[in-house]
Length: 113
Image (cartoon, rainbow, N blue to C red; front, side, top):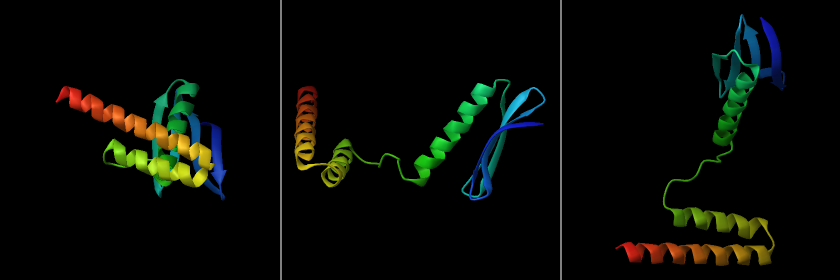
């Protein structure tokens, strides 16, 4: 068994890619659960699968999921984020863009119905 890629955080093995026979395998641990899978005969593909698993875990861990609800609520949350984290001129520009988008949406809805 050939170990090629591993990452250690706080002394704990978090993820690795290793070769077993002709197959490249992924060993990944997150939220107290361990996942081991035989992925492919390609090392590049196994590394991509490992990175994809890490990204999905990070999104879940840091709440990068899109909130459920309508688009207007998502815009409001984003504008609040912009208001807190940017200069006032940038915040104003984004608010104008949001209002323009909402007007375009309501106009397209009224044309359909």
